Length: 146
Length: 105
Image (cartoon, rainbow over all chains, first blue to last red; front, top):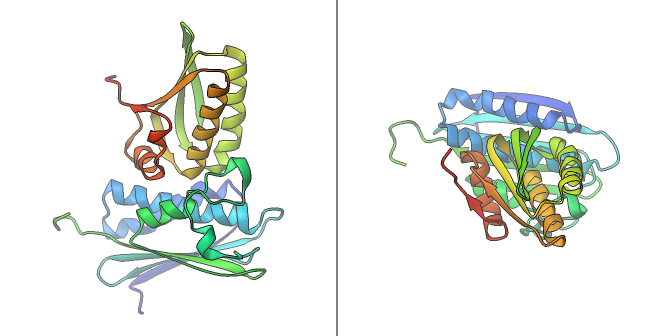
């Protein structure tokens, strides 16, 4: 599918980059003239996806995270967050609400929030090779009925 | 994220300001542990009016704080979440665990 616009960012899996990733995604999404609520949803979903890379994909090291954003026809924003880390053994299990391998510090709500805040969520993973989380959200143009 | 406090009559109010994500949550949990140890409050209010952003790491922190305060027989509630934090709280369903109120400022 031809993108009308895109950016690719790569950064290390350091937690200080969570805020940067959110802001970068919001800045790119701005060209679709989203509402504040839509921007909030996008920032939250990106924060969850990037945090998963930092906490789960590279638990003991610092690895690469690549974020690609694309504007697709009909005002759709696609965000792909990719890592080359640990991978997920059982994707269905990982996406169950409250399930986490991260201990007391994690809520297990990351995928639930991504799924609720975006129109579509796709997770592809190979243990030992890495994971790609793809998020899609159609931004309603102002004046469209909500 | 900054945490400022007010304490009176056994009630500790912790004001969260800024953004609460995984990067901020660890230090914030430490701060909350220290505050609970110092004040031993009967009631804990977490005021989110100054919080611009929260993700599920913030949810985990709120759950852990609520467990701590309940261990000592105290009560906790959340006050004045903005639009985005409230959306995360509602999606996670923790308003069933920790009451959320809006107080007229």
